[in-house]
Image (cartoon, rainbow, N blue to C red):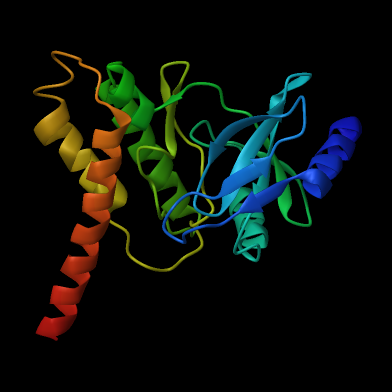
Length: 217
């Protein structure tokens, strides 16, 4: 682990991560060889080193104060099959257990069936988090993976926020009302531009809904 920490420190010094829009994922500008990007979220980018396949480095590109909160979330979760594990934090990066699999978002894109058991796994993991005094937030198709046929939540960075979030409830509802009767029975590939359009449309729908609710008060 100590050698990997040294590599993570070097990556942290060399990498530059841009934040072009607060509503879009951050964007790494330069990724030093042989590091590879696993994914990018609204706050951070995740990298792995081919010589250390069991670990990933998550580097914050904005709102770095959230790193300490994320560390506390992992400490409270402990070891649970529905989540990763945080091994180390320093500066603006964390070292996490690597979860290998495919996100629900990419499953829909590639026409891979999402078993109902995965939905139950996520429900159980969220229930566990609530019992630990956390507030599951921002759980959506890009933050949920299927790994070894199990559902796992791979981003808990917003679990400390005490605010309502309907993303998983809405995704769950869409799974049973739309996905299960159609795409599960006859899987087809859905282009990313279509999925991205749905994501943006959902975001504006939620904003409109909040605005209307405020107007009623």
